[in-house]
Length: 611
Image 1 (cartoon, rainbow, N blue to C red):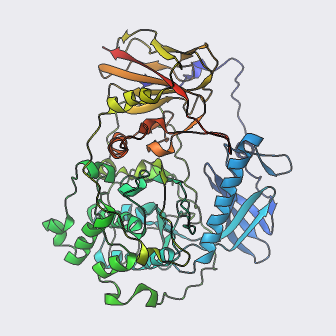
Image 2 (image 1 turned 135 degrees about the vertical axis):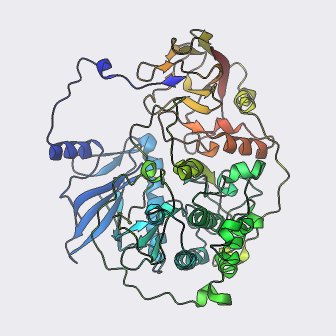
């Protein structure tokens, strides 16, 4: 089964392609995206360049006219919730989106306050924070350097131990400072650590996943997960697996694993069901290059269950031999003037798709590498773009060995419920990881799909009918009709003949998923045709019509392409851990604030066989 983009000759007759000067084109694209025009003045900052844009904000390069320096200015700009008005003011799209817009702004403000409270040379600084034109901004330094991922990819070979230990010294200190404030990073990865060009000093990036634990409260938080680095407790709301300092310990150990082996460890969700991890301490090849202490510390940090890992950065530093028993709090960080700002240029193709194809890790003992300019102040998780949309059932291109084994390029969103702490308590010293849960029983993907129908409302009749129940590979197109006796929002799931689970509809190209009572909806629409592309076998479909729109963050769904995908290892782990709860693929209904929320939906199942 192979969806494809429209060919050039399929463009509507009214579409005209004309040559536009590059500057005018860039300005038009920026205007269309809702960005402020270059040259705009925000407070004392004059915008000089767009560094990058994500789903919830944009980062500009700017000139500080008061202090005469270049800074990075980050603006809260959720593209799906807001619009830029003619006077530059940002406003919610409608009253319906206002509450979500306001909640997001409060989160943005909390992030600024979070960063501003820390003072460590390996943590980013917020120079200034303010609200203006209906939204919020923060100004940060620009740094010159390259990410740890780029450093490791610069040349063949493996990282030298002394160089790696120097990086770990700074990063573990920085994380200990965060943890003492009851805050966890939760997105540590090689591309979220920058090494400054002048000193090699590490600085932690991307605090979008980090949130303070509020006294006597727990907050459900959605973050972008990197499967090679995210521990099992980040994948779902598992009451027997809370998050804490040990969560960052796992991710940092995974970073160390990449540095010494050239690949990330197996995803934690897969390890929960069948642990294929091979301890590094038993690898004779690595033992000839690295000390037993370092390899054993990595193995300990990668304990698949929270209670199996070091419980704090201080404990991890002890295993690594850093400070040799001196508490982290007593170690003085080197004095560094982080208000110094330097202008940099963003690395070409510095998105997730570009960094994922790293061929091999490398570093010489000098700590110097070929400079790759990077906008270190970009805290946004920028969406991976480009033409890698139409990949469903297509032959995969050959990739370097590391790219095959390192799943870090794939991301998934999942809800997180951090543990509640009392005011002033330390996350490193007071939280106790839960007891080991019972062994999990794997659930087949087809069972997960069929489980959607078990909670359907009586009398809510939904059907999916294929145009042809059997199709010829390479010849036929796949098409089907959806019908419901009640109005609602349509969601179509596909378990393909290649054993991959997708949310087929709505998708990136087609979000119009409303259906009226007794209406017949024909899918796919012309914008996303589906060819029968094999492999031979059965394609299982489920059509869900819901009274409310739905949020799939809790499912671990990945949204990098046109058709969001549910990773099967994560789905299996969620199924095994849910007990008698609702089917993981359901996600949750988005109900109006303050109103009773009853999850009412109907489900229809059908199949199409490819031959």
